[in-house]
Image 1 (cartoon, rainbow, N blue to C red):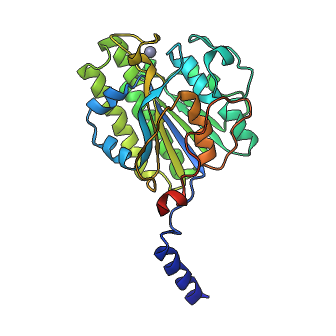
Image 2: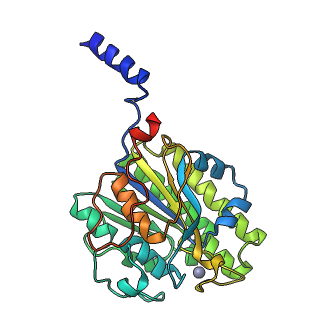
Image 3: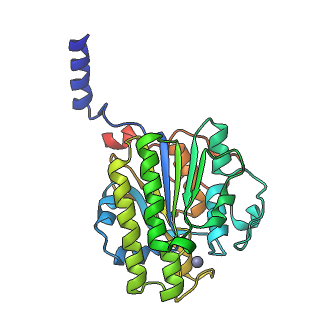
Length: 287
Ligand SMILES: [Zn+2]
């Protein structure tokens, strides 16, 4: 048997299919609040180049209008624009369709949320989350809150490895409002967030697809308008087995259907976003 297995392994290596590459079955979704794509580039954090090398990505993704935190997150999780989910400012309105938390829970998945802004507790209905952790940036400060919530995620990745982790880092939005977008203070807040993400990647098990994006951008000290500075967002799908490719035409409502399909889960029928790519596991590696 051992000999047969060896021959089989050699054959697999020769044909370019490696057994070692774990299939992506789980998702960690990281939202860096208020991160502009040009800010991501200008902040110069070395992790961004590393992510780009192994991502399907765009720096020209689009969020929904109004480019405001809660409506944008509801569109991300429910894959519809605000006129359908009903939340048009930072006051929550119960959506008429299931969000990603409910959809994954129904498929027997374990879902956990870790966030810096209390309003995001409304992204999932009661009983769909196994764990929901708030460390408020208003109370601890953006930088400390981001580090503390990252510690929580690292702890859970080492012990429980749920099927879906949502990590929200609030710091750049707060700094953008206070010091304005694209200032040195704002770029430093982005670097701080990439320091946090850089602590997660080494402990991320191989079966996780990492999805990284922002909810909206910003200009001067605000956001919410239809200006490109507010509406343009980066969207990254990262896994060490992926070969860099730019994604055309990505919208925030496409992110969840794409992530679920890539990890073998089913999007909800009422969702309106499109799947940005189909198969990204072994087949991409063979090319
Ligand atoms: Zn804001």
